Structures are given as C-alpha cells and as structure tokens.
Amino acid sequence: MRRTGILLLAAAPIAVAAVVYGLGAGSSGSSDAQDTRVSAVRERQDAKSRAESERARDEEVIADAPPGLAAPAEKELAQRIVASAENSTLDWRGSYGYIEDIGDGRGYTAGIIGFCTGTHDLLTLVERYTRAHPGNGLAPYLPALRKVDGTGSHQGLDPGFTAAWKAEAKLPAFRAAQEEERDRVYFDPAVRLAKLDGLGTLGQFVYYDAMVFHGPGTGRDGFYGLRERALRKAGSPSLGGSERAYLGVFLDVRREAMRSRSSAIDTTRVDTAQRRFLREGNLELRTPLTWQVYGETYRVP
Image (cartoon, rainbow, N blue to C red; front, side, top):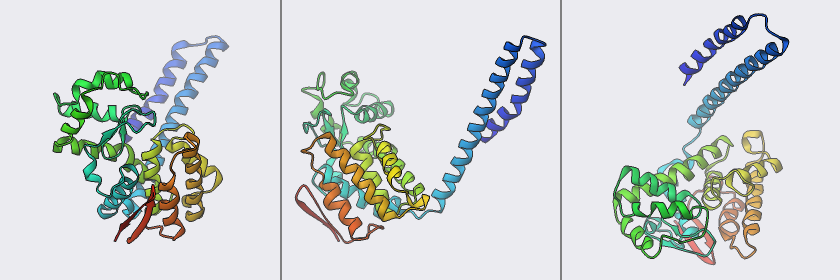
C-alpha cells in the first residue's frame, strides 16, 4: 500500500504537466477545468496519505494496548455473558445448532451469535461457508436466503431449512465458520474500536454486546450510530473523558435504542448485567461475576 501511494504521488506532477502542456493556450474555461482536475488529484492523494497515517497510528495504539477482551480467558467469558442474553445459557458452544423465529421480524435467528435470515449476516455466513465447502447442506437454500434477506419471511426456507441448519451444525467445519464470522463481523471490530476509544475490558465487552444486538450498522440505532450519539454527549477516554461516565452514557443511548424498537423489549442485558458491572467499578471485568438476564441469575466464579 505504501509503495502504491508513493508511485501515485510521484506520478501526479507528470500527469499535471501532460494536461497543461498538451492543451497549450486554451480558453480560460479549459484552464479552470484543468485546475479543478489537478486539485481533485491532490485532494485524493492528501486524503489517502492522511488515511494511511491514521491507520498507522491506530495500529500503534492497538499494539501498545493490553490484550483486554481479546485475551483467551476474557474472550471465553465474553461469549458466556452474551450467550446468557442470546440463548439463556452460559454454554455458548451448545448453540451452534440453535434456530428459531423469535417473532422479532428478523426471520430465523440461529447459531452462536444469533445470525438472522432477515439481517444479512446469516446469508453472508452461508455464502462464505459455501465458497469454502461447496455442496454443503445449506447451499441449496442460498437463493431463498437472498430473497428473504431484509425481511422476516420464511419463503423458500420452510420446511427443510431448520433441519438442514441443525444437521450442518454437527460438523466441525460449520462450527468453525460460525466462530470466524462472529469474530470477523462482531468481536474483532468492536474490541478494536473500544481500544482506540481508550476503553478497558468492560468497555470492550459493552461495545461487543451492542454490536451483536444492534448490528454493525451506521444508522441511528446501529452500533456505529449509537457510538456517535454517545460521543456527542460524553468524551471517550481517548478524548480525555471519564471511562465510567462515557460508558454510562453509551448504555443510556443503547437502552433508549432498544426501547424505541419496542416498548416491551427486555433490556436486562443492559440494566442488570452491564450496568451492574459498571456500578461496581469493575472496568476490567474481573471474575467472580454475578448478573441477571430475563430474571435468571448467572454466576461465573
């Protein structure tokens, strides 16, 4: 990438010269157009250079940060806490074959992270899995999955899709595919951004759980929209703000988004789990932990 950038920057003056001398003494309109094109080239190069510089700085921040939620034991803990909210269990590995329509308008919810037929992530999972494992038991449903994507419909999926999912979930390859997609779409981006925002292990989990529930969208109630709204109300630690204050605001914004989806929605994954950890000052998410979700109490020693 850096070599390409250098070549492009070096080539820009040549391209500019070719435009200027090739056209000769043209009209002032042509000259204005030339200036606009030259300016556009320079702006693109400047933007590219800034992006590369910012990326390099981000990589330095990530490299210097403690492992946090990405450490094996903490990542395992994170999956257990998410599973308590997604599947009412701490045994997240028992959910590879889970699939049902929970009536939320997102079609079938399935697997270890609640992939949904209506929210694109389940389709992407099956497409990527099929590229690696052609002829798998879910591949015949790809045309139907593409049609129902973005809806709560089961058209073309019933009656066989749920059985096919459960059968495929018995295979190590599909289990690995679910974990890889979870990390690629939800876990890794959430933890990375939390570290750049200066958040500790609890904050990284708060971002991760929000990414899972709200999805990696940029709309008002998608994860990135929630983060932007929180940042407008309180500075993150990387901006000089208080970690506890910022997380409190983020949870407020998130809870509001959950309730705006449905006034009947259960917000205990925020109220009596994450909010409890924050209230206790457990910013590193150290065990033992006790929390409640949907009225059930969970403990990790």
